[in-house]
Length: 320
View 1 (tube, helix red, strand yellow):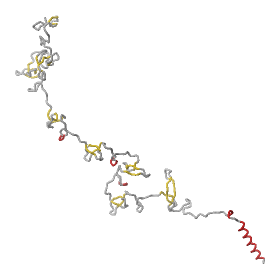
View 2 (cartoon, rainbow, N blue to C red):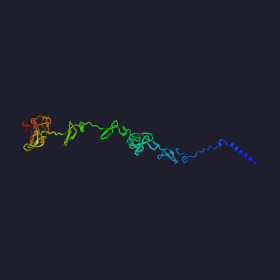
View 3 (tube, one colour):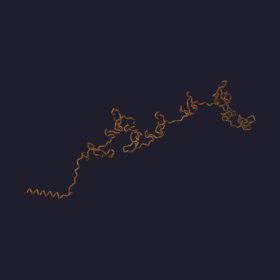
View 4 (tube, rainbow, N blue to C red):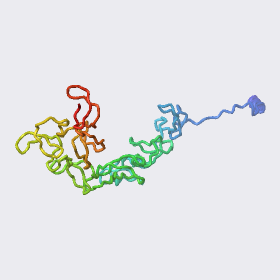
């Protein structure tokens, strides 16, 4: 009987406790399942984030060592390679991974084989910005907008063609040799250009494209001499070429010894006009006609005789 009482009291006590507790009195504690990487609170394969050496947040994946490692994206994930990567073909020859993820021998020689591109090709950097492949095989977004990006040149730039000839970049981005129009294209010369003939004698290119020796213009072409040149006459006496192209022995003193003539002597100028030797030893054709041409004076002109006495030119052309 005593035991039944105890059981009955326990029943009512439990009922009291249950009915005296409401929903708001119960702690809502969630039990979180244990993660594979407690330090990270993540599981293997979860997306994670860490700061790279530059302090920039980078997405990664939790690896089997519970480390957050950077995600490497390959063009060809099955072989963990990118387009253009070096590889060995089935025949163990050098090749590159092509856009089909096959290792093939390169059919084209690229400036930058690792990216299968040439300097000047259009490209996109890691941020998707358009650029041009520079000489370092990097995608430079600061590259100049060349007229010919493949050769990094502008129209009109100086260049050398395949034969080494100097030229200019044309509108088709080809190096066109500079063409000079010569009067004599076979010898690349123009009329009047200086030259040397086969004997080494200096000359000038004539209208027939020949190198003609430069002629010397002589006062006396038949004897190839000029007025005043030293000479020897028929008697062996030393003389000078006179204005008549004769060798006159040096027997007298001339006013103009280089031409063996005196002031007032009759002469002929270079174009054949008759004149008189003036005080400058030139053949002057536009001269005054003097009464006394040898002294370039007229009768009655004031003069001074050899003794220093003042006088007048008389009709005999003497100073009296």
